[in-house]
Image (cartoon, rainbow, N blue to C red):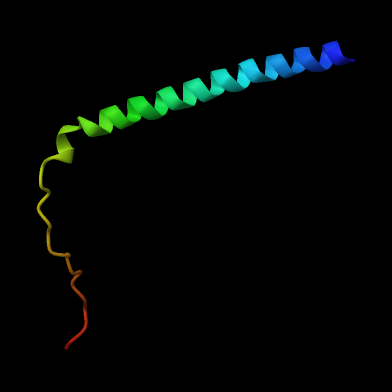
Length: 58
C-alpha cells in the first residue's frame, strides 16, 4: 500500500509541477507581450459621447 501511495504522490507531484510551469510560462509570455505592445504607450484621444437624435419636440 505504501508503494502505491508513494508512486501516486510522485506522479501527482510531476503533473502538478508541469501544470504550474505551463501556467507560469503563459503568464510571463502574456506579460511580456503586453509590456511591449505598441498601443500601450500611445495616448488615445477621448471622444465625446455621441447622442442619439430623438423625435421629441423639446
